[in-house]
Image (cartoon, rainbow, N blue to C red; front, side, top):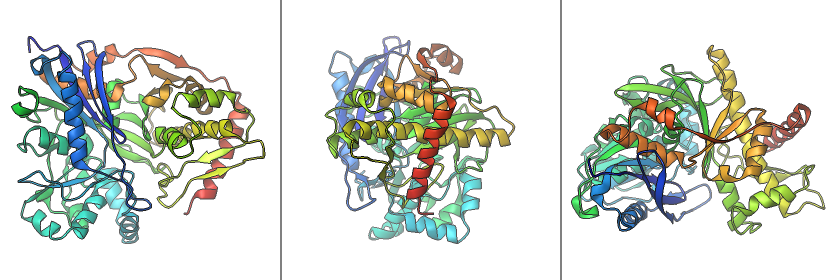
Length: 499
């Protein structure tokens, strides 16, 4: 540790894989990134190649370690990952049996509907804090076991491993020695009882999933194993793991009940710390594990939006209205501020608080003078409207629980570099929005977790003292205008809902 100057953070996301080096102050020093191919076998299906994920991870990590930094300079590795994405592989060989089924995938909508019809959702929500939706890993895993030859029989014999992307990467990094996950990723599988902090045998029975498939569940700061020496020239401890949104919660230092962050990556995910209390949502939000440190679990309310940064990607790649994401800010500024155009981005259904997997995207209110600028503006506004949906649901749940509603929103992710979007967000919310000095908070959270485990960083108090606000945005829109715009959004959503 004496010669170790950095934490290596692996941030394996939906559209890219990145590796970052953080120093002792929590500042990002270098980054390597490569895009990840999206596979769409049919409507509503989304897959990734697990081997491509692994090769990309190896590539970006080695890229950092051949740029003047040696493995001996790395105190530990932290991993954060796209959650719910499901991988099934052979225990002996590490060979995947199928492409990874991505969190956005909707192929198990009928399975979820059947389980709801059987009256299972109330029990599932009470045990896991989640709803019966194709979003989560459990039904994806059941689908794989149902559709791959002999998969369930082999799983029962202990020949197969299931994991979310963190498990897959740790398995590969350790040369197959560790089949593990952390409590945050486990809490997103639909299979983990967040009260008992163990896999739930009743739910496993409903889905026909053998326990022998499942990884060991550890704290977010833990000994997850050491990397194979052949990978980086020296063994490095893997010491911190958390799902991307929980890692961002740590990176944003949301350690106190009532603190809330929202991450604008491919999707948008808002998480509100509720401390030791599991707040059951009456507004179709999720109750989840925020983090587990030293065997002590902190919980959160979470709202998940499927399309945020992915909308900007759609504007660029499919609609060809912009050539890069930075152009969206200029076009939104140039758009008619009184444009009635509303985009409901239900390209893969709608997440919280609607949970309608069959809803589809629609553009409303276009007139003869609607142009590219108005459509781009409507796309960015849709993320602000969806965030308000989440904050209103959270405020209602917190009030019912006798807890303080969030007074401000800490934000991070690629979209928050867009000042027009930031101002629109605070205007639609009617609440302050705080952008941190380090917006790489997902990767930073993973680095903090690994660093706390090996003594590179102090505890959560030190992390909280490190957090700095780069800019606070305050609402400027009058209340009547805010109400009118949000009402127009709600009407548009009502027109695409299928239930």
